[in-house]
Image (cartoon, rainbow, N blue to C red):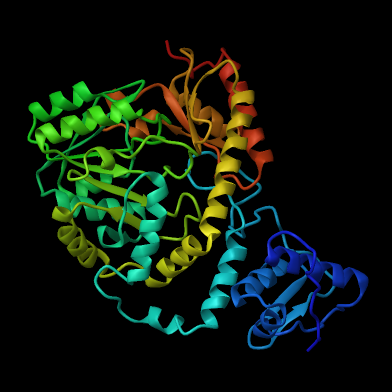
Length: 464
């Protein structure tokens, strides 16, 4: 094993990056040679006076950059000559960089999640925590996971405490849990006129009757919601006040107060889906702040950290928490302990905030590309969102536009995907900007979309 210890004195920046850069420099100047074994992480951490987690992250970063490779049970070695690892998708997410350009999936952009995950798992391996995640957890999961969840929710505007938070297997599972706890077969479930597409399948399986409520340019209409409550026996509303999908509308503070007032007047329960709430640097307070006894606030880390990290958070009033815990137990017995540990570690050590900031920056950059390329067309978007809503010109029918785009190698979703009844489908498509791993493919896809919008002579595709 090589006795190697970098000199980090008088250098500024994140320590794990400084170590990774020092490894690269040592390889370049010959002080580290091919097949040299690096120091054990614990030893190097001790010599540098750093945490094991920092050194683990540094080694993971060096592996990602192609400087090192690890061998199970043997250690970490300087990489030999040969092809460097593919880095089109820096997080290691397996997303194709060839073939059709996919604007249908509302996922976060690939970032540095893989390196962070490798470091966190290495840290767990060297601690006494790992074995605990192989056993059943207490009702609601480990207390430290709930404490981390509450800490994650507070910057969104909630005065959250650990005993008010319930963990789930992602936001979609959280939605299922909420419906199991708050509605009964045959109940009416109110939704926005355009809504999260899987709610239709969930309602069908739970035997709930969906009733769409009209929207305007500010989002869900308070007057229409009041009418729906008066004219039905609805007990629950599902809505997305922040960066609504597919329209990208964010309700104002005033609109949220109005919606909350209607809910209080009719004793209407609310499921507030806030999965995109991490994106805007400034945002109105959640509906849950205006109607705390009515509202289950639902979010997850999947849209801001990594979609494979299936951890969701529900913040709920006391009168609903027992039923929500029971629904979690019924549907999956317990939250995913190892994933919750990873998410909690990232929240408490600042990793989640760094990854979150990357998503904000990348979302802004991609929205700027879309605004430039689609200039002159009817685009509804938020500069901080992952998607945009493109209202089509009169000479295009949405399904024909979708088919034409697909023939040119670009996939989009039409408005029909997001409505309760097909007759209400708007002539528009949703374009998700962050799924593609590299911006060049985003640009290519948007330019194809722009070209189609400018065409006026598609026999068989035009509305007549």
